[in-house]
Image (cartoon, rainbow, N blue to C red; front, side):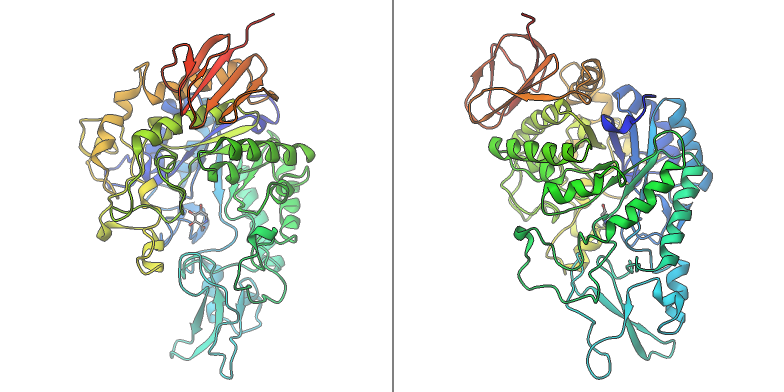
Length: 539
Ligand code: NOJ
């Protein structure tokens, strides 16, 4: 891909490094493993990759707790492997996004270590949200905010002799202290981190919890009742001040050639608030989580698609579609169960998804997504139709959510299982030793890459064909026109291609046109839970 503003219609594949491919046999995926699979991704037909964090980290949150933003953690290889990955990807014509984690650092980062030993009010402490406690002796936390991983959002610092003192905020794990983005030292520090990686040639950044960096002044208590539906997420999310940060970063990116870009991970209440992150002087893309969160419901999809496209068009930005990532139940399982909390994970004790139904719907949802104008993100393994692993033994769970919620939620391990590459190899070919940091379910063997590549009926081949056709008919750069159809059918034209998705209703007769691709067998009609791309007849 060489055209400018390549990100507008790119298909970007998320590599979750620890579960993608292991080169050294320790059971964890690594950068050399990822490098060895770049030709695989080229063959699949994606334009770019995004890698979840591979930086130096004590791994309290699988690397989203960064101790050094410039170094590669030994678990993932050498620091030079990151440069090699960028070079080898570029040689294949693939762009590379890396993950930027600016809301918090690890508690092992030098900035936090310095803050801990410094005095209250010192410049070191001002880099973090460190505050006096309430109550006579400061024994109560500064406000009522909770951690997203369960438990209180504040922890108390202690002097070496054990005397308790100020409190620090952590929206996530206790080992992930929140930075204070009012601090110029923090802002300047991140400018340098951006430049470091841009100098090394990365094409851009996925920005972690992009809606949380700036908190409401004074850190007021959160209302008991979330005002989410009113479009206000409360004092710690989606504050207007956060946009200054992205304007500043945009200027840094624009100093570089090659259309470097940023994508926001921002869970905000409505498409209009989301579109603010992709105004012309801010980021380039923002994940459309309303689309990901939609249940299998035609009216809901129609509404989300219309609203997000309108909101983004108003600011001149493309829409960025996504169905799965490392934080939510995989869509091949999600769409096979009742609506429920999809970041909480699924355990063997929960009602089980219908994975046959789920995969059928997931394939249709994927063909819907890849036919829409804009950019799309794929999560590793979805091209294999992998289901969520719902029977990870409790004693093997790794996600901090499991302990943080005192075992109320199993967390996200089930969507982070090491990939199956070879059906009859130890560890399904994940690495040379057969070890895997999380166990793989039996069902993954028949879904392994070697079982699916070259099989014209496989999920993998559907993805490959869809990506080829998407490029051939320039669907990502196209524009859509809705067609008249029964309520349960999404029907639209994108250039020469007519797209129909039957969302849970009775079969409908296929309109005229050559079938380019379908999510299941179609013979004269489009059955329930299926999608088809037709070449429109020329008049
Ligand atoms: C969002 C990331 O995707 C998730 O994996 C992580 O736990 C939190 N942000 C905290 O960094």
